[in-house]
Image (tube, rainbow, N blue to C red; front, side, top):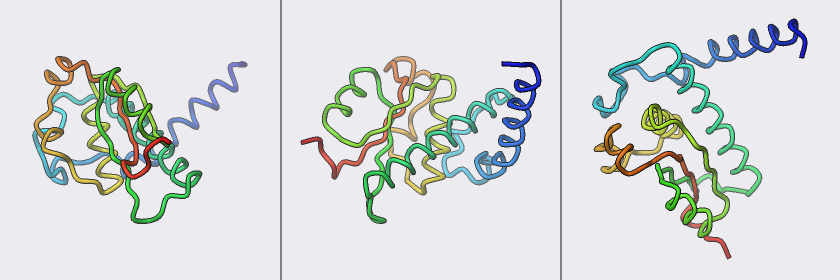
Length: 150
């Protein structure tokens, strides 16, 4: 890839990030559970959260269209370990799995649930970086519990 194309690609990414940043980043006042807000936030982490959130929401929207989801059908989102991810992939179809850095997993989950107007569970409200590391949670998994695999 030539230098000019790389620069154009980088510029397009920057424009995309700045255009969607305001719609995806959640200010502390808007968060229903303030303990979930990152204590340490820097630009790289913000960009990662924005990118992962927008990509995941895009994938969920496409999957819902492809599989004919009705308006009342919703995704169930959860943080999973490798074993939990495999179980959900085996039991439900369609599903969407993304491996996300444990450092930003909680923030991405919260941002996606906010974007999709889904409530947080008690388990997710109580989660923190220590529980994510202890439980070896590294995947964000979305599935519809009303659509088991045959």
